[in-house]
Amino acid sequence: MAEWVLKPMKQVTIASRASQARKAHDALMPEVAAAGYSGDSQFAIRLALDEALANAMFHGNGGDPTKNVLVEYEVNNESVYIKIQDEGHGFNPKIIPDPTLEENLCKPNGRGIMLMKAYMSKVSFDDMGRCVTLIKNRNCKRPVASYPTQQD
Image 1: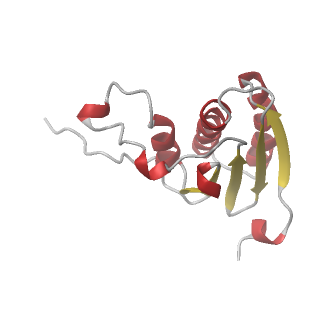
Image 2 (image 1 turned 90 degrees about the horizontal axis):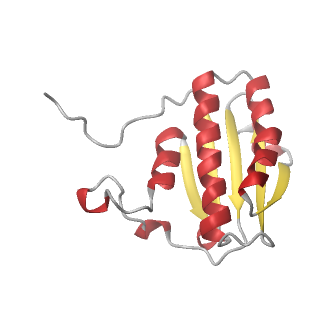
């Protein structure tokens, strides 16, 4: 059983302002580095964290600085577990169009979720789309291209 299930999660609450994202980074990322995660894993975790925070602040909370985003996290030797919850109305992640399809290439939505899924071991949504859980296992081989590469 993973360690993070057995002990209380650390928490950071931030206002829905881009400048506040640094508080989450400053709390989480030094622990990731101290736990010995590779530079590639640290990049992947920070990228996914940035995307999830932006989604929570601007899509979930509508950019309303009076609404908060709760970040809960745990770092251990096996994995990094991050849970981000906003105060918005939620959404259905299953209806987000695939941004790699030709008809969606110019649409601005869906890329953040695609990046999170490409770089993390597991991404899941709950609480009616108001909460995203990100898990990065130490042995994760991501990023993995989720689309075919073009051959010459």
